[in-house]
Length: 126
Image (cartoon, rainbow, N blue to C red; front, side, top):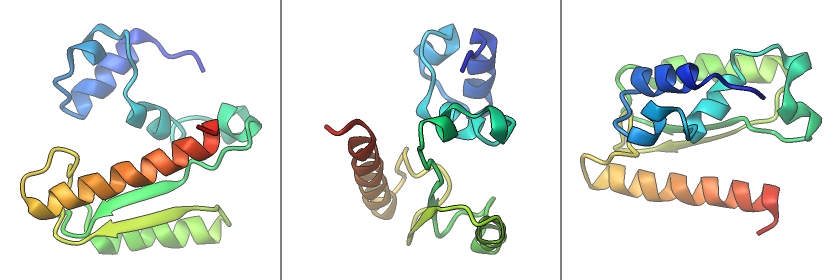
């Protein structure tokens, strides 16, 4: 997938990333790749061609902007579309728990890193 450097910078700004590498466009945040799935035509997806299932939802149960009721709507849509997916909810964690603000978010961050690590090890066999 070809991604314009300006789009990486735009995505980094939208997610309020302060990482200088993202501002230069030289590195793409992992969330950019997973979010890009939502923007592209499924018939043109490199992930499908590779046989990868990227549907992972790692969600803070106390996320105010995206409460569990909204996540339930996503859950129903995924089921209706017969999409394979994995969902994990982390109690005590709000939105953006990868920058922990309390012990619950530290725990959620560690658990989500473990989930991502297992997923990537499964893909790359390492």
